[in-house]
Image: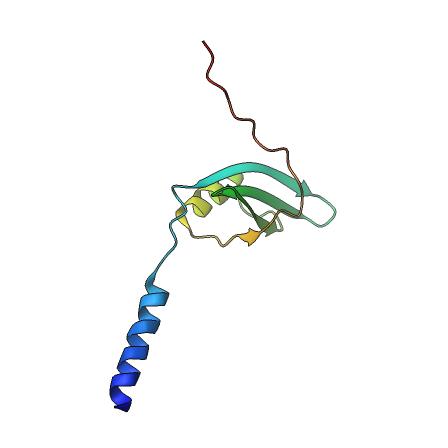
Length: 95
């Protein structure tokens, strides 16, 4: 009975850790701000309408690389923005 429980729990753990969240469909880059005094670059994103951020201490990465890696799901994002940015305006279809 113990062996069945161990096998079941290990399969359950494997199934939870195997899933990788795919950001590609719903990530929108909003803005990039740099704090020169702290040497930090803040990147703000919208994921499914929620505000998320990535802080690059030392500003070691290029903006394009950060955006690409976030869309690929390789860089973790933190909830909420530390530095506010103006929201992107929705373009309305004109005649």
